[in-house]
Image (tube, rainbow, N blue to C red; front, side, top):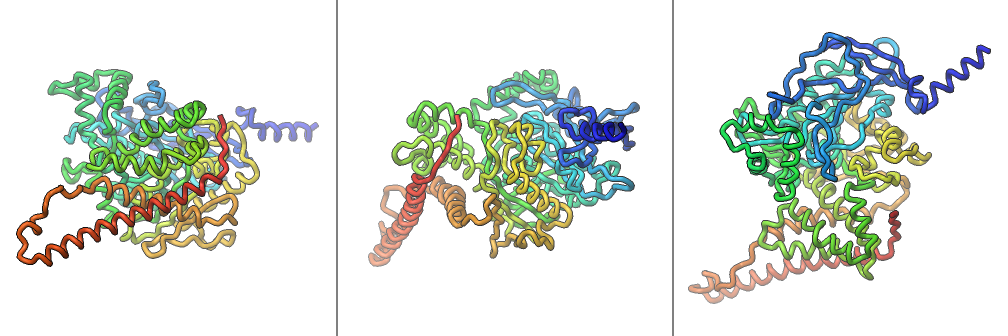
Amino acid sequence: MFLVTLLTYVIVLKCGCCQKWQERKLSLRIPQGLVEGLTLYTESSKLVNSFLGIPYAAAPIGNNRFKPPQKHAGWNETFKAIGYGPRCAQLTRKGEVVGNEDCLYLNIWSPSVSGNFANIPVLMFFEGLDFYRNTELPISGQDLAVEGVVVVIANYRLNIFGYFCLGTEEARGNLGLLDQYFAILWVKDNIKHFGGDPDKITLFGHSSGAVSVAFHLISPRTAGLFQRAIISSGSAVSAWQTQNDPIEASKEILRLLTCNSFDYLRCLRSKTTEHVLRALQEYSQLSDFLFLPVVDTFLAENNRYLPNEPAKAFREATFFQVPILTGISKPITHPQLYEWVDFASQGYQQLQYYVERSKIPEILRLYKFTKGPNYDQVFDLVNWKYGSTSQDDVRLLFDQIRNLEFESKIEAPHFLQLSYLNSYVQPIFVYSINDVGPSLNTTDQLAASDLILLFGPSLLKHTGRRRFNSMEARFSAQLKKIWIDFIYVGNPTPNNNRMKQWRKYTPVDQYIENFDFNSSIDNSGEVKRRSLAIAFWNQLLPKMASHVPAPNVIPKELQKSPDPGASLRHALFTLVGLVISLLILLIVCIVLLKKKSMERDNEFHLSY
């Protein structure tokens, strides 16, 4: 009878559907008060402690709205940290108002070990899309925590609530970044109570979370607060970051909300969350300016968070440096996927019309090419590369839309940022993960290969409603081992016999570790494609967009030249330079054309 009872107990513990049997309460005392969390059994049968929805700052509502984060007062009774805090206020892609302004909460997962379990390295994760919205699903850090790290995931204010800016002390902008900074300080002061080492903190960001980590790297305020940085599929030097004007955007929001009086902050604070977000929605349909972080040199020197342009800061490398692991991962899906599928189902012409009238103009606006003198030529070249296929093949055109999104928004900006790090002293390790992720029926932008593999299998269960297959499970374990080694020692392959030594990325040896399920695949074609894409977006198009054609007049040197031979030589040199430029462009076009002809033989499967 005893054996039957024991066997039943073990089965119940392993049963994923019997959640109440997997949990047991856990209480800790921290400076804010007593916190009650849960100890969970993971899919790997290991224990992990979870503390969800802990407030790290006072609620940014009422008089705290549009203010930097304020210290939380703590609590007298036991705080039950057993559920996720609300998402920060935002608009979904369908225009729905979701979330709450009272959102400055963080979640903690730590390995459950006996005895004194302090001094475990800490991983802080930030995510988000364009600083505008974040993932629809709560991300669990339990599958990384069981590998031997304390995982912290923190919310921060988004869109207008996080980046309203008028270039003044009262409307300083960067509130979302300051929320993250406040969360880092909170972790620094409190993580030891959860088993973490406050002197071994790694910041990890994806998409706009990755941009945030890049900003924290160069901010003098965060110097020494973290010891490693992981930057995934995000760049702080992209055109839409560096050429953005949140001040102009903020003034327009004041106009839409009729807050034109002297006391505009009181007016803003009197509006409901939905009222503010509806004004943001109306503004977004009229302008290309975004609510993003801003260089805040308009503030007093000791109050600035971003005193330098990111490109300048990276180039000069005068800030506090830490080892960096950075790379890109092709999205498994995309927020606009269903829209693309709808156009594709209507035939090639409809999909091509969408590319020419919507997708390409959208990206050229992000790059600020619409203001250049040669917009039409830039548009034609991008359309030639991405907007048509031979034999009007809808499958290939669909594939080219995905390439356009990835190469222009993720790949080219990432390598542009790397190009500014030539003077960086600490080691940089660069990776690229091909489209090796599982097929998912979702449009959540979080569904990128690296995040699914790192935060899986629990994240895959949420997004794909399934488990890893055997190949995915092995690849996930390999990737986690590499990331954990970097978190521990700042090197992804320290004395690792199971994998070749990962070389540092330097200006001379621009080494990139390419990940793929099949390690025997020849990556030479992918390397060539990447080089062409980077040159296309970071060099060719910017030069073409900014080039000012010479006026159709006789140059001054040719009007009154004492030496006719000199005039002739000058004209010849000018002509030769023009011919060389045209030849370079022709070579690029020929290479791209060859690439497109090779793509006709590629197989492509599209699920409707």
